[in-house]
Length: 105
Image (cartoon, rainbow, N blue to C red; front, side, top):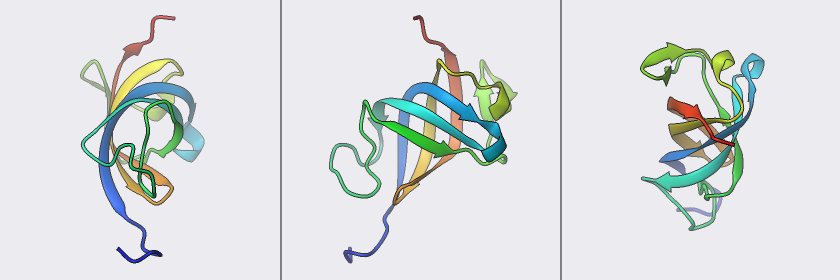
């Protein structure tokens, strides 16, 4: 890979929602676990457990909670989730999102 090239990587990860910005189609989340992609190797496209990241959530993707389709505005801080995303440089864009439940705090 040339040094100036931006890699595009598909990654799955689970975590907890920190905040939601439905006006700008974004959510800030804490990563709990990463699977199927680049993990712990550094560089562009890596997502690490314990990291807080902002995800772009296009209005065209399906967000499900308990099998029902919901909107980003219905996602709440504290929700646990599983997402498949595309990482390109510093930009993380959701492809699918499944909300599990609220964390027990």
